[in-house]
Every structure is written in structure tokens, then in C-alpha cells.
Length: 346
Image (cartoon, rainbow, N blue to C red; front, side, top):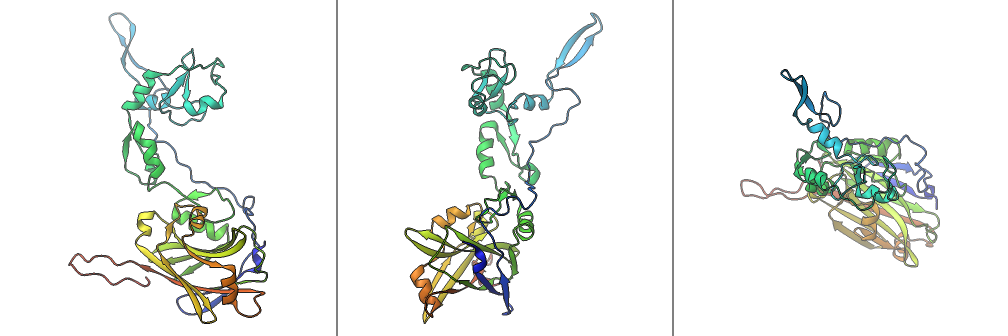
């Protein structure tokens, strides 16, 4: 189902109402329409003037024999732990072939038990010495260039990086399976320029959704609007999808930041007509949670089709829903012992 049949009329804090034409969007229609600029993250670089795996040496003046004096710098150790297949750092179990070539356990299955260096059969030989070296290292988080100051033992590093607050965010745009990732300013520009998302300033919203044939719904049609308030960005989602045998309409808010910070805000949504109304109040979910995860948890304002048609009035042949709402910052304890009044808008 094409989204050009949905009309969005937005009212910003000033009270002025704007008309917005929703572009004809389909699932995944941006895959081939913009240049992919993923944010890449490199492992910490350690400078060295010696070639990899080299050993510093001196000449003994008495014998003119080359004598090793020191092991190679830290760079050689990290390069030694680099898997030749995926180039990621190797974590125990580390496998090796009969000739001593190593690779990580993930890539062992990918190369069909053949050494990628000498093509000999790998077998089940573990490189215990290299595993002990790996266990003894402490390494910075791979997101150190994005601001993470943490240093971890080798075993703890992976677990931390999967939860690191400095790791990039995935694009919050629903339905396009967009693979772009980056920090919040980058994603805001990406949503505006590549996905042509409507951007608004203010902490209140007033949207009207119009659809000509409410009895047909493809799982799922959706739209997204970004709001900027309190110095933060919020994604307002509205979509129709099939729940069981009947379509439902759902609106929910996501915070462009981490979950801990999202809990500092609350929002309300309201839809109604014919003297009736439904109200939802909750905490916005972080965009760390995928759009599908939030939608499938039903964490938002859900309107059954029959109720939506009742709110629309008329002959029930056209969907006309007006969704209003606001965002506010939660109360915070005053250091002097009082309680701060919630902020309604920045």
C-alpha cells in the first residue's frame, strides 16, 4: 500500500497548522537512492617503526653476532592476534593448523576446516600460548575515537562493546531496512536529507492522518516525524499494520539517545472524535531498541480499526484521525531539598 494516501497536517507550538504531503514511499525504497556512508570504527592504532613481528637486535662487538635485546612493541602483539580472514581480534578459542597459522573460531567454520594461509587441514588444534597472551592484555574500547575512555581485559572487551554508550546508533527510519549507522547529529542529517523526514521544533504536536481505504492495510505502512525540543531529538512514529486478522493503527515516540537518558522524558498521545477519546502516556523508548521491537511490544497508543473509524465519523469509508500530544521533561530533585516543576518546553 502506498503512503501517498496518508495526509499529515502538523501544528507546531506556535499554533500554526502546516500541510505536509507524504512522499510515495515503499519499504526499502532508499536502498539504491543514496550513497551509503556508514560510520566505521577502527581498532586502536599503535605506531611502530619496526615491521610486524620483528625483534629488536644489537650487534655484540666482541663476537659480531646479532643478539636479540627486546621483544617487538605492542603493535606486533595486536597484529599477531589479528585473524587473517576477518581481520578482527582473535578471542579464545584460537585455532591453528599444523604449520602454526592461526585464525579465530568463527572463521574456522567459514573456511571449511582449511587453513587460509597454507591450505592444510586445520583439525582441532588450539593455540594455547596465543590464548594466554590474549588473556593477559588490556585494551581500549574500539569506540575510543568516539569518546569511550574505558580499558578492559581481553575477555571483558567484547561484552562491553556490545553495550557501550558510545557505540553508533542505527538509523531509526522504519520500513526501509536502512543499514546506515552513526552518531545522533549524523543520523538527524541523514533522516532529513536521505529519507526526507519532516523536521519540527517544539514539544507539542497535532497531526491529522487521512487514508482513503482504511479496510486495506499492508503490513506495515508507516510514517515518521522528528521533533527537536529540550536540545534533544524525538521520533514520532505512526503506522498501520496487521494484528491478527484486522488492521490496527499505532503511534509511539522514540528518543534519539540512550535508554538511561530517555527515562528523563515523558510523553502523551491522544486521539478522539464523536465525544470519545483515547489517551496514552509513557516514557519514550530509546532508538537502541529497534522499531520492530517497540512496535511488537505494543508500547504506544494502539487504535483498533473499528474504533478508528468511529473517531473518523461520517460514513466510515475514509480514515480521519487527529493525534495530538506533548513531550515533557520529568521532575528532578532540587539539591536544596525542593522539587523542580516539570519543564513543558525548552
